Length: 83
Image (cartoon, rainbow, N blue to C red; front, top):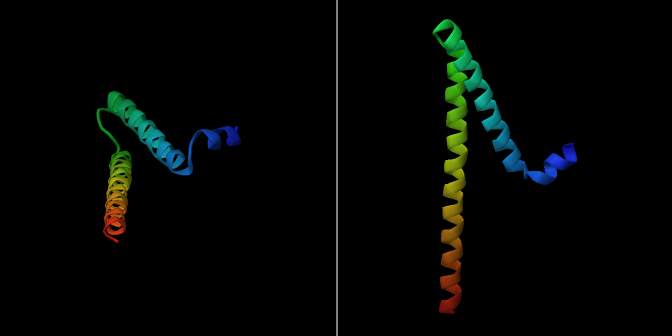
């Protein structure tokens, strides 16, 4: 089972999937708690905020890294054509 999971997803994808799965578990718990008690526990709310910030931060850093790499590749191609 572990081998099939690792063949299906890369390490980065597996980490992101675990974060998203955790987010939806906490979200489901929070929605059920709100439906029964009318409030959401502050710890669950803080965990939701944290997971949102982590997932967003990973996506932003991935896009920034991609932009820097593309800029460097473009710059190196220009330098080789000048020579």
